[in-house]
Length: 143
Image (cartoon, rainbow, N blue to C red; front, side, top):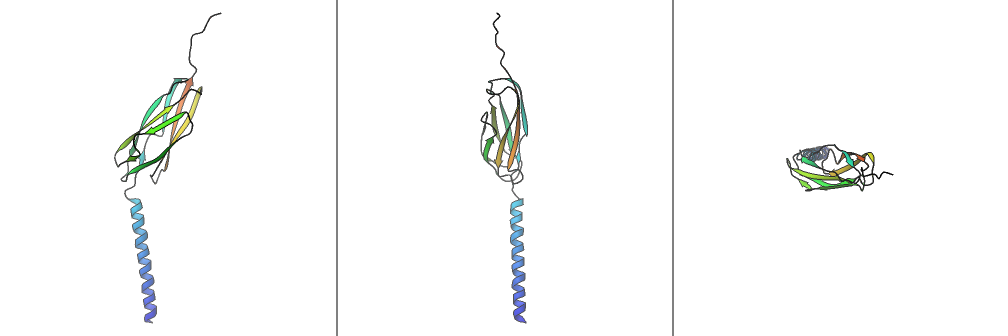
């Protein structure tokens, strides 16, 4: 019987060690996580065709771990985006500058920008962009 007891003790030890390993991994994943905070939309309003309105979003890290911006992806070549830093420490923020080139658009339009980060809850943060483009008013010749 001592052989069975030794095997039982080894199995229990393996189960306990596995449980400790799983628990510590879970604790590490739940602590010190970043959290991306940014407005989810912006309306540039009415602009004249050919204008390139710009808006600066504030991207804040509301978590406890470093927020790393992996990339920005625009839904159209008409959108240009850049961020002041790709590493945002807890409680800090960065400026996300977004420009909308209305050269090829008339009327109401909607585009998007995606911010990809290491935020475990929101790895793809989408921002909706709206604009209403009007044709330029110019001088008309009378006949």
